[in-house]
Length: 477
View 1 (cartoon, rainbow, N blue to C red):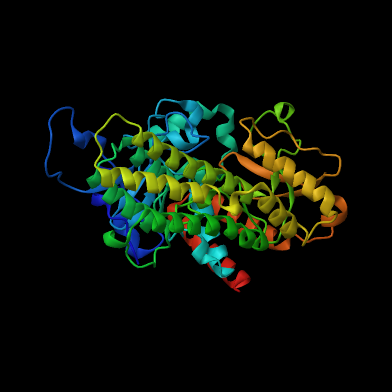
View 2: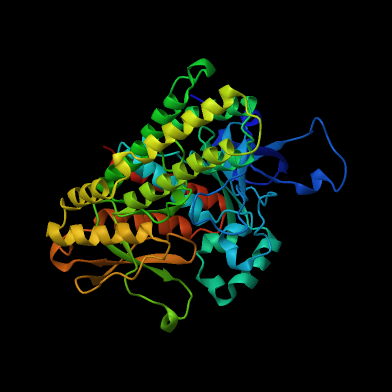
């Protein structure tokens, strides 16, 4: 099983950390209760051998829909073979002084997010889909830092009281294996390359290696070619897109795709999941908890069950930017060695073939979506037109327009929180869906809400462990 070699990964850098008072769900993770210690860097000076505990943070260049002031892992990093989220602000948290980005800019992880990551892992593993994700293997809780509490109260105002009790009392760290990289990591690396041989050797091997699943054999330099890199990327993109068929069957909705999927195709940021627990196609509306009801727009906004199209759009944009950046290096007024120039030219050709992959095509995506949705919905002609409209809007530079709601009706059922102040209501086609039961998803709601009601670390960990066991027992394949 591979682990990210931090020291040989050009987009990571060191950040000092120190021990903190976190309680761990699993005993083997006790040593992972750390937080960043930016003061240890000092104002002046240089060190050739940094001392103490160190976290590796990763720089990212998101291919599209990037958020300003988020430069990479602003609250997370690689540490002792694990990827930890919620360890405090890193030097990449340029959003540290933007109260409007309070969900990502504080350095901490809301416990409700860690709970969703952990229980989503339990659910997907129980359904036999554990190899589709970068799993959350553990959670740590600590009392909410006093200064952080004051900042959140000020940023949220009256909405502070709408947070779950656990989010008003505790903060969390989630634990994942350090066996992945993001496409955005390689886009950042490529933006710094000049096109000389030594840089290409490392970039090429890493790109091919992390396009493959963790149990793949190590990529050897002598076997790494533009053609083999292209095959690995094509395999990763087809895997990422294909996994959404299984997510659909398992009733998992992903509310945010951008930069949340590992390069190898596995879903990474599991906190964005909604567990419908059965195939579902309809629309949801985000209900902002604590907001003025009169100011809230409760019309249906986004189609659920079509996240596969979002994934395909992002992957295509990312590979396109890889190709175009390499092509721009060829045109620089530099005296590249003939072998370097040949490598870059062949890389462009290989990535062109990846970009032309039929899996990215509109007809293939629309046909696959309609075939999938036809399992539970009626009228293929209307479905095809609706999916095609969604695809075209996702490919445009404009936000997705409000959906035509004439055939959608609001249900009484609401999912668990998908963000600290957001839950989701359902809009469904009345004839096709009203007879379906939401019993399994309701059982998830009860388990999640039981953990969210906790204000004590020990009780929260006990409730989380109970919820995991109940989910694995109920949904075991």
